[in-house]
Figure 1 (cartoon, helix red, strand yellow):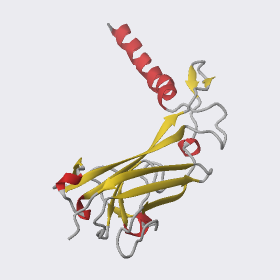
Figure 2: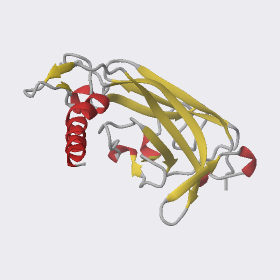
Figure 3: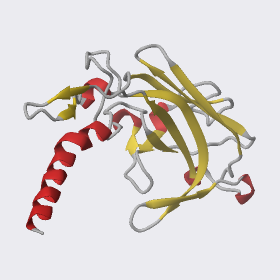
Length: 206
């Protein structure tokens, strides 16, 4: 029984220090400044109903039939990614194989150059059709999380504006009485552009 316990302990140590890094922190082979752990692939968007709660807030499906105001409008933008990692195996001083893990900062995707939100119709008198209205955008990184003005927002994982899942509200009311579209466009430093449009939003104007 004691031998079994010892073998079990040894196996656990090997798994934690040798095998687990292979499964969780592997990267493409040279770990150079060009190595990428993740690559962004698409930007999705969805309107939701913002519902205050204690603590934080929650969401429900958006419906134009509910006749909701700007204060109830919440847009989720999700910049999704795909893994492009490959395992590079090497040998430790003990002769056991282990993964050569790269610095996560090296392996993250290209940073954001611009993050812009606009409407195909006048949002209000201050923001006509086509105008970028980041100045009135409030962003939270997760459901129930704190909202930050766009100028202060930093994604908690990447440190880059607009990356990951972002929940967007507005600090000014819309005066648009007709259905309108909201378009988010994200441009990365490497020149790639991701864009998506939430169409046919109807708000009650008070």
